[in-house]
Length: 190
Ligand code: ITT
Image (cartoon, rainbow, N blue to C red; front, side, top):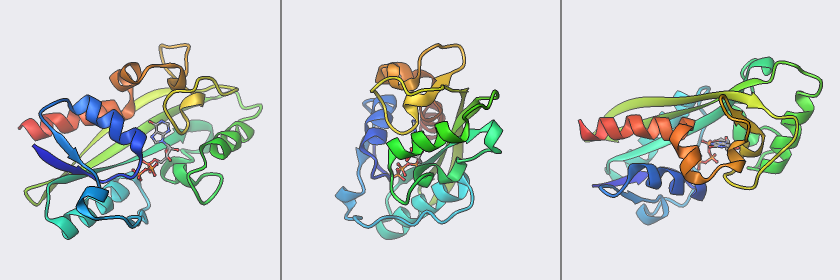
């Protein structure tokens, strides 16, 4: 089954195609001729996932899905949340975001955080949403070189390593996106 995944993030594309497995052919935005940045102007992860999926559906008429992910840190009132990509700067500067997060949490004891992924699926013109959550803590220094974004700082509960110290398979098995994609697969199989 062919389905458009509305993302420009190559890491995500790799993670999601690994979880979806063989029965699905993921089509990229470039392959359907969408090269511009899709506006993410929503106030919540749900709204942004939905905006991205609808944008693609309106232009292509193809079945598609989009995700939006945020890191929600308890001591920061849920920040950076929907602003996770542009926490420190306007761009997707992962290193600057991680530095800012460490600064904001300096001396803070409560380091509880969670990643939340919302996926909006449009299939046959009908929209459905699923989500995936992983709870954890924010480390006091970066470790590991795998993954992307806040992975070097995020230690999932029950582990003593960050996501960036795990293989892609290990991360996918317990991650926010892995769980959301597992729910997506259930919807696609219904
Ligand atoms: P697209 O909108 O093109 O899909 P993006 O990088 O902007 O890509 P999101 O809006 O979903 O992705 O995610 C916002 C930010 O959250 C992202 O830039 C990363 O900093 C962070 N993030 C998302 N998923 C993550 C993960 O699995 N591990 C670590 N950080 C992640």
